[in-house]
Image (tube, protein in one colour):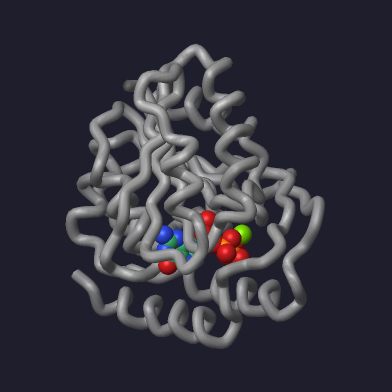
Length: 233
Ligand SMILES: Nc1nc2c(ncn2[C@@H]2O[C@H](COP(=O)(O)OP(=O)(O)O)[C@@H](O)[C@H]2O)c(=O)[nH]1
Ligand SMILES: [Mg+2]
């Protein structure tokens, strides 16, 4: 298998049917082989049933469902990334805020030797089809001030669309601890420290409705996670 796509999903019963069918239709037209792994941790809605109903092991693009006992997007993505064996792996959010076509360019960069290819909302050339609410943008700007010294040369650590060469991400992940929304910073920081090359692709980003991110609760937790990361080896 060339690529495993991880989709972390928490109460995503509403979006997953269209996200999965659109993704399967896209992936089956590519030259590389791929599969989709949805990681659910105890959604209160029908997320699990929907994925099980759509999962098939023998189609061109198999879909599978795994669970994760530790809560948080970071824990779910980590579980998904560690579960596979493909040459390349990565994840995107269930709301498809980043155009899926970005994956074609990402795979080209990875094939040419990049360790990580990440979508960016803050690189020259990026645009917004629909922006986040003001409070998220403000929090995001403050977050980027802190992360700019933590991950060198990367302008947007938080976009929910990242793909990796498996060896590089495994080396970064073995030591990673952040389980919440700030997990990307630790992954990228460790990957860079191991000598990995990160490429940012500017994208046209559309804010998804019904975000699972709670501005106060997850916002504070994300800044606390950054402070804890500063002390990590
Ligand atoms: N498995 C799992 N997925 C999560 C969790 N929290 C968020 N997600 C998923 O992470 C992705 C990004 O969340 P989203 O609500 O779009 O956040 P935003 O884009 O930052 O506003 C979505 O696919 C969510 O379903 C969690 O605790 N567990
Ligand atoms: Mg989103």
